[in-house]
Length: 329
Image (cartoon, rainbow, N blue to C red; front, side, top):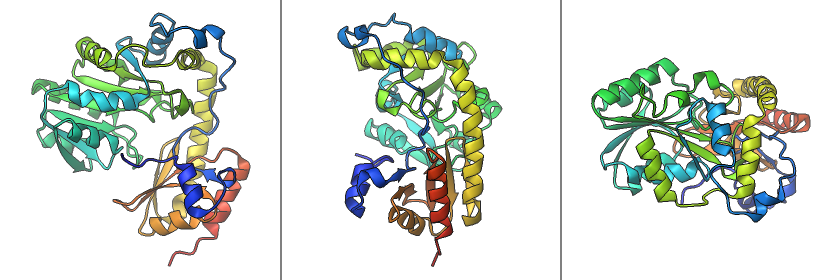
């Protein structure tokens, strides 16, 4: 099983620091989540039903009714490769490691293409996969280029698969409204409530794709894949436009603040939910912060350190002090 951020208990045991003392910046999850209200008793007592309002709320929020709710986008990420003919897939790399892992496990040939979407297209594979914004590099693929890429792949019978887990703060850049439509029937998009809404524990995500692929995915997943309380909370969160608007403003400001805080240490790229430092000594910095009970996400295959947003002003000051105290060798 691949290693991911958020393994706070493991870090606490490794460094001998109680979990309650840690500042966890390893996940890129909004630290000020949508406030889940008390849920109706029926959400806990009855089997989940498809006509409970979740699909309608998601269609309105994302601008596309061609969707399937899944138990976190990870569920769809794991199953999608098995639903498509085995071939070669070009992954714009580095990226969320579950993508190439799942395609390879399903028998596809994975090509990791470092750099741009145009380079991935030049690989002439039937499938091209990317994260936008990219996790972990925070790189962005312009919407018009991605739309053009889907069109090019369609001409050669291929598919464009896009993971938009971190795009909610900038919905104007999203490809979700086009996924599976007559304009882009070969476009597949993953969305998640875990990052922007800060509700990773709900395990609610969506697959947007052509109807026949959604049907295959639904059959592969089976019934009741999302718990009733999760469906109820997600429905309310997706409909809360006022909270979303306010949160986008706050996250943009906090993301820029984090970028500026890390900028003196090396090359920094940022999204509204995390910033990624590219520097030679990121391993040492990760260790320096961990010994001060600040958990970040280190990528051993690349000189990258991903840092999420602190939850409050005390967290910001704690991170600032720890960075100021670091003296690279």
